[in-house]
Length: 540
Image (cartoon, rainbow, N blue to C red; front, top):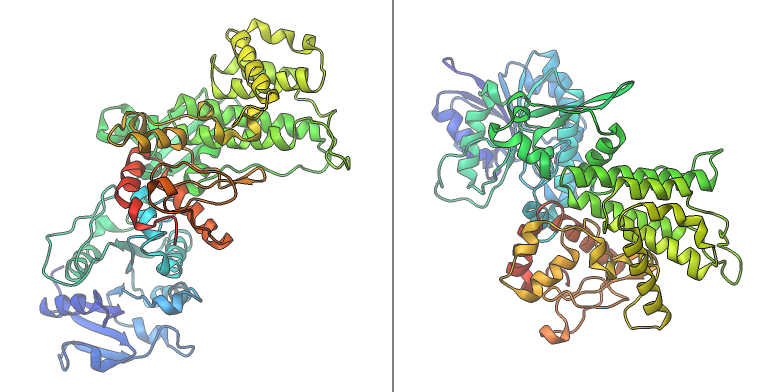
């Protein structure tokens, strides 16, 4: 920029703001600053520094007068205490943007925290860990920042906005020159972040890129059911095949930024997207006019399609989420005896034979889905007296005989009341590691045998069994041995401490932590657990 510009700086007396003001003034620009305490604004008495007294929470703040005549608006706002109770930044930005439009001010840089989730994206596992442990007290601020980013991305596309998700450690000497990146994260000083924001706000290439990053077009389906999606590249690069296809420019998909999946169902891709955004699968409720049998059949088929998609594109966490959902469906919807009050008598609710055959036709021998279906068949024959002839068509599929025999063995062990056995296994799936899929990195981890063994048991499962099917699970953070009745705890007696009871609220917070820990990189999660196991990450 060759000419002197005028910056409106919000948060000018804060750690980053004061450095930004000094940098802009040193380069000959004018600065207008909205401050609650003008005396805190350095350097006092500078001829190109204009102080406007006020606060973004003032009801009578004139945003038109505030932006009139400026070239750039830079927001470095943050009030942790106030943001615990209200989204004050979001409310202010929604007033500010219309005034910018009115006065022709196009460029707006908003500094958010590095632990704030980008719009339509997710945080890497390590940042999730930090956010829900060390930085838990800043939750309101992160949510406020995320609401601002969502507003800018969805309702302010005409504004040249830029979001700097800053990772600030402390003040001090420079650690070097920060560079914009969609894949890496650095912790910098206030001065370094201010210098970065100063350069970035005048960088045309940074406009509308700091939140979503690069986009990828995905075309899914064939025939009459073809759907096109625009997805953040960084989101897709969190998982298996998509990461390999898009990163490094080695394949056509990475060069063109476009992926075509003609053999897949759009619903399965949408389920994967939803899972990557929110960490869970979305299934609809029973609609009016739909029988329970129809609902059961629809849910089972949807689980199958998503699992096949996850297996095809190397997304074990998605497959594991399907397994847990399928176990829930089979436990709560599949036929079983009525209880003593006949409250749950659904003995006539059968899994359709065609759906069982579809499961076997779509999966390979020994797959977790087949194990669950074999348990269902044995349960119907041995526990409910159904004739085996109902299932004879399944004998045509390779592996069925072995899977049926394995399920028979599991049933007989349960019938003998052997310790630690349950049948069908979908009643308490977390006891059976063979039902889940694991990342290769977790399987190869051998530095700590006890930890590695435990992580192979649970690694890659997005929703570990904190409260599953009427049960809850407790585990030592070192060896992950534990039992029922409590959530994850600090250390067991063998590892140097007793189990530590937690409140329901604490358990819910720990679930979020554990979810993030194993989201997409079990090897990294295992490393984090090893480094921080003695810090009481689970117990308080």
